[in-house]
Image 1: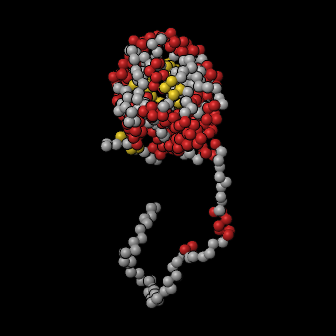
Image 2: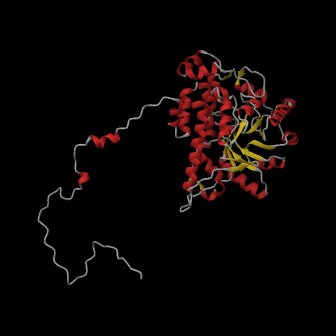
Image 3: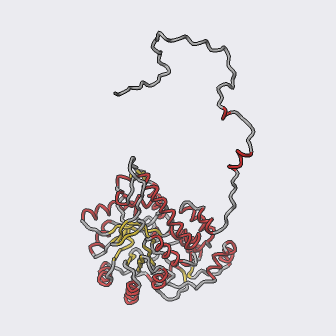
Length: 445
């Protein structure tokens, strides 16, 4: 039998009942405090009430405590800025010319709206994915960065070991400050990739390729957006040189950051993975290395030479994405070099849906990866939803490195992993493969 319960309507007139007994009239006046709950009456607090609230924590000044207090990549950046001299910090943090590209790239991730689904079972979140034929525990890897031991003395060793521990790929730059062989030895069970700048001297390029293959790197990442060096004005203003020069300005700067200088001066001098020791400005070094004559024929040569996965980094148009795949690339990285080359360049996040649509139309299984502007796990989730197979971080990991060496890189990855898991759960998604463009709407400005 079904019982219907009528809602109580205080304004309705009750139906007359023969058994009703008229209520006694209310007193003309009532005490003001009669209706006040006991919990709202003021009283002096007892010590037993205060004791549970008086739990003062001992201030923590250790590296572990400092890193634990950072809940976002931006907070790691703040720590990094306090602990790193201006020249190397600005080299990491800065971009080309007016830095418009970098600003737009970060804003692109902000100018979206997530569209969550409800009533889904998200008790277990799986962030694993597959990239270029192998599994990755997270849908993010570490991008190639140059001069890394200049940012913090542990440099590429910290990055590769943190990536190994996290189960994600690590990419060593041609302009890295640890050798291919040393990185392989430091992270023997990691998935190591090598990033290549093709030089006019093809014999030297071939030597690097052979060393990378011998050291177990399964992916070669060729960067193609560096015909010449971008105008990185912060470096110009700071008089940035390799290695950093001890001028009056740097000495004064060091007085506020003694730990950085102590580490820098008491470790092996900076050397590069791929070239002999160099002294000069960053721009001069880059221009001496980069080859402005590169064409698609050089990509063909690389495809014939390298037997592993070949990905092309620096793709900024749909046409170029399609063309490099036609020339044998196994994947593309939508990237404007972190805004460090051409200012006002296309934004990878904006380009992503167009490239995904083109690859779907071409029926190609080439991987689509993306970097530039990623500062949170939510940014990564948005990129995956709009069609990226994988993402890469550069500055985000370097902020962690500068903030605390290997432990700081670990903290970067912990923050991103927690961000991604939370964002996916709130979207009603339990696996990376369940993310679709329906989960993200790009806002119109």
